[in-house]
Length: 373
Image 1 (cartoon, rainbow, N blue to C red):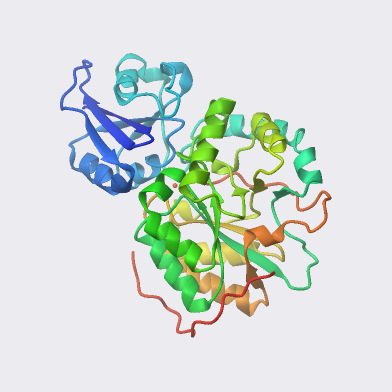
Image 2: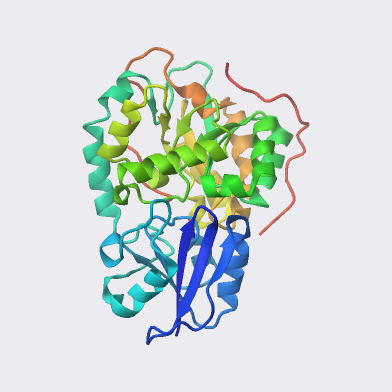
């Protein structure tokens, strides 16, 4: 059974396939970032292949698992040093499966990308809270808004896109209801789909930064973190909101220090309502879970990217209907930051992420976007 090493660079993805003896079986192939579905389809048609990615490549593993392929993660200790911007190379990833197979982690579709590393993630988050004070004091750290706000504001957010066709379908639903949302875009996808990004902005929605390749931040150096964020800013056109959401919600002391030192930099946005839509439990379960958890000031985590998001599309009308019926004002995540520089909106967070089309079921007339000033 062959191994497929899948690397990423600023240009997209490279695929190298080797057999169990370490011999390359086909010429290397490259797939531009905009052809990520083509990469998945190519591997799905390859008989009994085992895929290998590294911890800086959080864009592809969920899609591969959705396609029924086994995916292994090779962590830094099992690989040679990475280049200045990119993952370990594809040949090294495939080779790790031959020479260091016992060091690889088989990803669980239910546990996701961080299979086997959740406890490490929690430790990093706990350590980061000791260094979060300056961001809190500057009003640049939000997990939810003011619970006592009489406007009962609440924010819909979507991670990991742009991801055709699902981003466009979500935008269609939002347009029919006339409500805003915040899209935390991955740089590689934003660069590959500028038209989708332009539509998000032109529709009055908010764009945030979700890194370039969706890495596990504890495995990055400060230089790599800076490149991930700054290149994504460039791909997204330096959005005025200057919002940043770390992949999987993972914070590290280095991230906190880096953000604090950037006085004109990003504001950290987490969430307090996890839709768990990446697990694809069904549209009804997604909608019911979101409505049950929502409270005034909530920031709702959903996904337009990272795989098949048709269930999210199907759940969205019921979510919006339920929130509006409960008297919530749907607004942008950036509007939930405190207006005064004081600690605010910090609560214990979940740590999710992070990976059937039907017609819209709403007949609401489009109206102006409801957005808090």
